[in-house]
Structure formats: structure tokens, C-alpha cells
Amino acid sequence: MKIPIHTLATLFAFTMAIAAPFLRALVAKIEREKLFASLLTMVAVSSALTVIAPTFETLAASRLIGALALLVFWAVGTHTAAQFG
Image 1 (cartoon, rainbow, N blue to C red):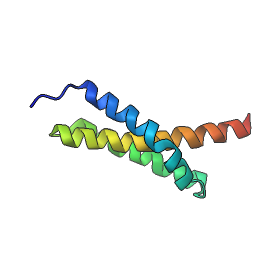
Image 2: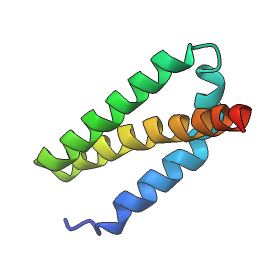
Image 3: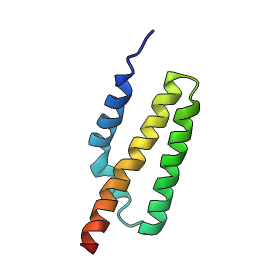
Image 4: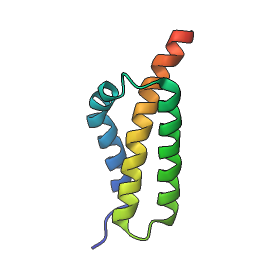
């Protein structure tokens, strides 16, 4: 069964749109320095898994991990940057 590659972009965007409010609320009380370090580690691991993914399912899972980490990073990072501005 062939799955179009644009499915990965759709999965990434859909995950970010649906999960953003929930994940932002979940991480609200975590110290920002530790949170940023954890999120960037998740993005790095996700990228490494994407490179070596042997199957489409592994590739999709690694993109999902990356989407979850990036959405929290953007939400928290934007809020943090606004406080300094």
C-alpha cells in the first residue's frame, strides 16, 4: 500500500492544532530551563529517528514526537520572549 508523503505534513499540522492547548496547560508549572532542554532533546531524537526510520510507521511516529515537542516549544518560547520584550 502506497501512502502519499504529504500525509506526514498533514499529521504534523493536525497534531499541532489539536494538542497545543492541552500540552501547554500540562507544562505550565514546569521550570522553563528544564522544559526547553527537554523539548530540544525531543526534537533532536525525533530528527534522528526520522533519518533512520525503516518503515513509514516509524517515520510517522518520529514526526509525531517532533510535532508535540515543537508545539510546546513555540508556545512557551513565544510567551517567554514576550516577557522580555
